[in-house]
Amino acid sequence: MCAVSLACPWFYLLFFQQKLSPIGEAVISGLAIVGSAFLLSWIAEVAQLEIPKSLAIALVAIVAVLPEYAVDMYLAGKAGRNPVFIPYVAANMTGANRLLIGIGWPSIVFWWWLSSRKKSFSIKQHHFFEFILLFLVTLFALFLPFSRQLSLLDGSIFIAVFLFYMFRASKGEVEEPELEGAAAAIEALPRGQRWIVIFSVFLFSSAAIVTAAKPFADSLIQTGRLLHIGGFLVIQIFAPLASEMPEFLIAGILAFAGNPNLGFATLLSSKLEQWTLLVGMIPFVYGASLVTGGHQLHPLPLDLRQCSELFLTAAQSLFALILVADFELSLGDAFILFALYIPQFFFPGIEAREWYAVGYLILTAGIFLFKRSQLKKLFERIKWN
Image 1 (cartoon, rainbow, N blue to C red):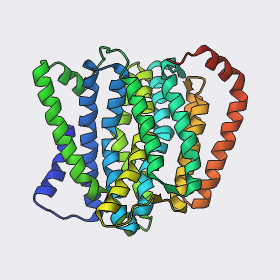
Image 2 (cartoon, rainbow, N blue to C red):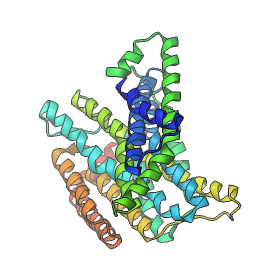
Image 3 (cartoon, rainbow, N blue to C red):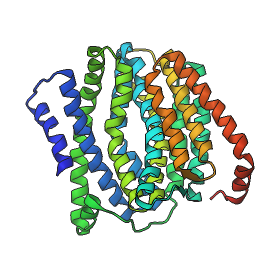
Image 4 (cartoon, rainbow, N blue to C red):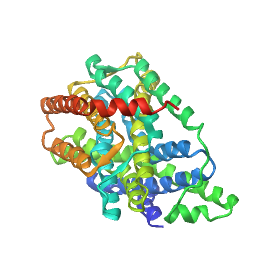
């Protein structure tokens, strides 16, 4: 009921056409997105009863980041009709990707340590497939800024990787999940009632997200102007916080309950999907907006700000993958990821972002050389399955 109540004030404003200040509208629409994301995460967890576990984890991640897709697709569509919005397209996507690694991954270790007092956990090696795909798509993204554009071909490659990932995930076995809280309450219902609840919750949450995405993005941009911060940074910081918070909490609960691998798997899957489907859909939505608006079809141009942000996001992803490539995530690793992420907020300049990315790449090379013998043994032991 608490999650539902977060969305109710937004529906009141929507139905009665009430107007608020940009900050007030950002808060109300943002809370609706947070509440809806919680609801969607719970019903997606229940899906593990019916489908393979790997596919269920992937679907949980897709549904959990649905608010992110809504905001990014709105901005991409708006950019096709109004070039002023082009600089904002990459804001939410890059912010969300870096937040997942800078806060999400470390939080799993923290909650696991808090409950068990163990300083690390081993990542199950059947996630090797996701690691390889994420590594390949990160390398591809690392060179995207040099083209200064995001084309339909680029989008097709990202989406193809996502479809391949979903195809492989669907080949797993169905496993009985360990559900808690609201998800467990839904699971306890008879199958017919369970699907009615799932369908109703999905419609309610989707309606809240779809209707709130536009005012949420617009009000964040206006709030940034009022506070003299800049719309790009406001969207990059606050939009991902609203959409990722439920996913972080659910993954943290899983880790605290003694299952850090499942919590990490959810965030890993989310990271892979954001790097593939979310990025891949942007040029298609932008292109469709151009065509419907009577403009000539062309790739989405990336200005210096977007290029630097994309470069930094790819560099951080590559660093994180090499850091945990030994399939061990420790408190030390978590501290490094967190400590390198937080200072980014204090150096928002384009040149600072580029130097930050170079620093990540230098550290990546150093860690790779330090761990190369250990990584070689690991790769020899793991089978591609």
